[in-house]
Length: 291
Image (cartoon, rainbow, N blue to C red; front, side):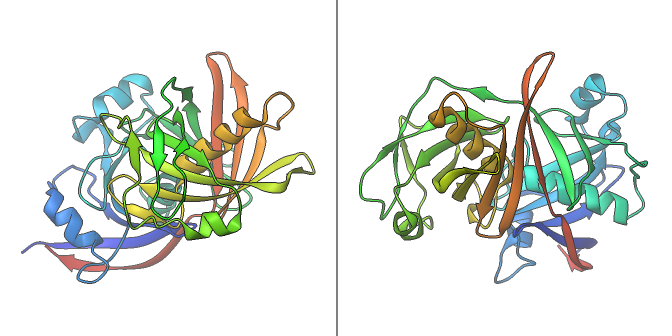
């Protein structure tokens, strides 16, 4: 048995077990990750975030090559132990954890560079929590048909990478959004080779208020099931809705998820268009666990 200190945290209800492993000494198996995330027999979480120095994990080499200031790497695992590229809610909670543990600091008005398998992401303090530049997004040509249990008709989805893969569909009304049974994995036809997160989106009425777009969303995350929130999913949902709305749609969005509210903003950079995510990051409690 090994005793491991941990912290439990969440971003709009998307919850994580956070572990500090600066020197990369822990080698948690998928079964151990799943046990930690089990809500009946473990701590309970949508995933595990391991804080390891980029220089001490193989995946960190690419992060340091991209940005030598990316001292810390967010080793993110889904609740079933599988590896994910990035997590928009997770990286905000991860940043709060680094600051709380005294492992890093953000100078006034500055940012912190965090290494992820989806690339280096810059995080800064926001009026509520933190804001993270999720980087350049891509719209894929694939439009899989999405079958969701208790949604009466299969819907064509729009495929967006942020950089982890998402498929977004629209629902007709509040009743349809509420009726969807996301305890079952949505079926995609054709199915992406690496799977995808699936977002169900309901546009606001009105869609735009005071220059800000408004949508509500539920999500099924690959490897975790339905979660109360998904940060990159909120970004994908806002991007998809802007795409559907056409010319004149805003670049600022408010996304209502079951766990709270997230902000999404699209902005131009030299290499194309980036999308950012903002929202709270809460550390709930700390303790130790034996594995």
